Image 1 (cartoon, rainbow, N blue to C red):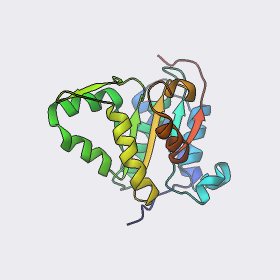
Image 2 (cartoon, one colour):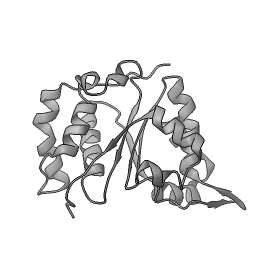
Image 3 (tube, rainbow, N blue to C red):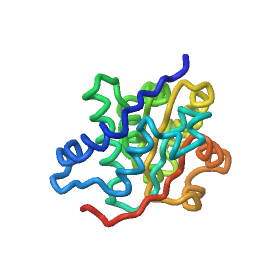
Image 4 (cartoon, rainbow, N blue to C red):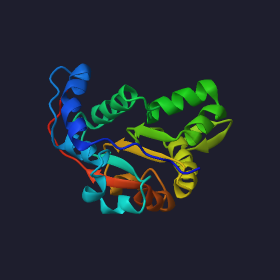
Length: 196
């Protein structure tokens, strides 16, 4: 079953974005990063990212320094989804994934693989090798490789944030996954002052 992504009118997003952002951070003001995320999830996304016209389930990966607002903008979008009756994307950090796998096991990984819309926060912060019954694994690598299959079928969308650039990501993940990331995501390098 093909994933049907709910897009919002750009004027609606621009109107509610500051208010919702200030619920997370009192001093929040929309900035260039907000603009990237608003444009991505708006009804005008094909204008800003023409590849989305042919691959509508391509996700957004924000790449940039710590504390500049990558995560908060995804949280705002998640809150908008909830406000307008959407199930909403699931947001989980790379570190949380490792912790939850230790507690819940393989079923937790399967839940993330099966999730329709997933945002993995801070990829590249996870352990490069996670001990799973004596076997070394990179959990984020495994999850993204499996989600790539459902992406190809048009059944899921994956988003991510990272403090790394593509060259640094190559130290964490093999060339095969990096190549698939380029297909799965609109890779957007973002800059700004730390809000922390």
